[in-house]
Image 1 (spheres, one colour):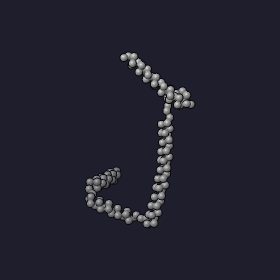
Image 2 (cartoon, helix red, strand yellow; image 1 turned 90 degrees about the vertical axis):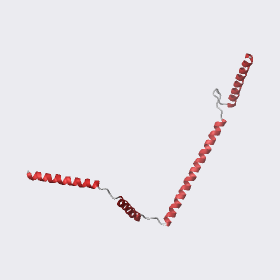
Image 3 (cartoon, helix red, strand yellow; image 1 turned 60 degrees about the horizontal axis):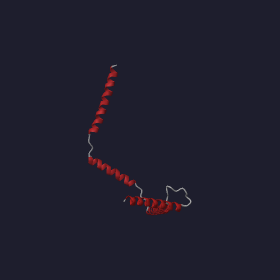
Image 4 (cartoon, one colour; image 1 turned 180 degrees about the horizontal axis):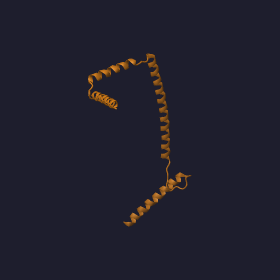
Length: 135
């Protein structure tokens, strides 16, 4: 049993030492200049790994981008033009069409307009007659 107690004490002591070492590492502050230097070293190492395309590949890719941009631009222009034309047609139809709330016969829209004008003229005459008789 005494051996077991000694072994337990030794493991506890080694665990305490490891914990104190970890705490010491956390307490140490890194030198900011070393950190910046390490950053630039790793950046330079990554820069060396970059494979640049050849001039031929760059021209080919640029031509593809320009062609696709042109095709998409023409497609958008065409769709926009069609939608604009359609909206102009809808607006012209709305301007040319008059809707009467009292219209029963939709076969002759001009008759409804004449009736509306006649009713408003009669109402205006009645108002004028009333105001004249009141004086």
